Image (cartoon, rainbow, N blue to C red; front, side):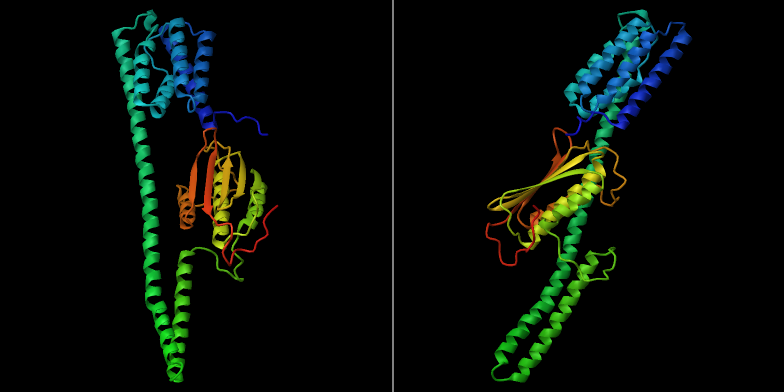
Length: 391
């Protein structure tokens, strides 16, 4: 089993170090200017306040409370002039971004007087210090609110662009497929009917209709092939016959590739293994492939688990990782466009095409989970994929 993951990241550590260095420098310079002592106890308290910022993302309220209390102790122990430490700014900013309005308002009401206790050598805050702290809190909370609003707008615009791109692509493909079906396939149907009607008494007309039918079918296939080439634009030209489409029998292969790429990956199969329709097997394969790729790109130093379950009326696949979701991408993972969620959109489209459901969300205990369920009757239809399932 992997050791329990720490709750802070490298960015949090940099923020904590920067806050500690800034507050230490500011307090020491202020002590020199005002002629007050800067003791080791004060330095230790400032460093402790900054270190609590390591856990500000998971526990914003306790971290803010700890920073505020330690700051008040520093003010009482070392009489100084008005100030608003960087550690307190970061803690209040994080709380305002992650907590609700009621919690944020309570934090501000507590921060304004407590952060002024002990300033100028007095336990009772002066009106000047209260006003200064109120202005500082208003600026920090206002910045946090603006940052939240900007982030929501960015996410909304990103989702809108993704939906618009999917809708436009669907309309374009639908128009082109309609042209092919409406013209060539309709012609083929009419020519087949004419050939059947004239086969008994007019062999020449039947032969001519069959020739037109053959030409129309050949042209329809060519245009559909061109349409598929457009959809596959940007890929390398195939120099060999295309390989069979992958299915559930190939899951072991991509799990092995994930392990070779440096991510510890577990693969289990539950339930009685049975053949699946080729399109369903391909969908399961693509969901697992995309989920493992995203885990290698975004989960950092994490492990993954792939679980394939055969049920009487459906097949389910689940891919989970235990990464924080904001770790550095692995160097072995290819950087692909569409990092804003187009891979998840593609997975949802594939699963919805077969009447299934897909869930993709962060887990409460850390990491990310992708789970798909596809309806498959126990008696697979004719033409089901003849694949050897992994053991």
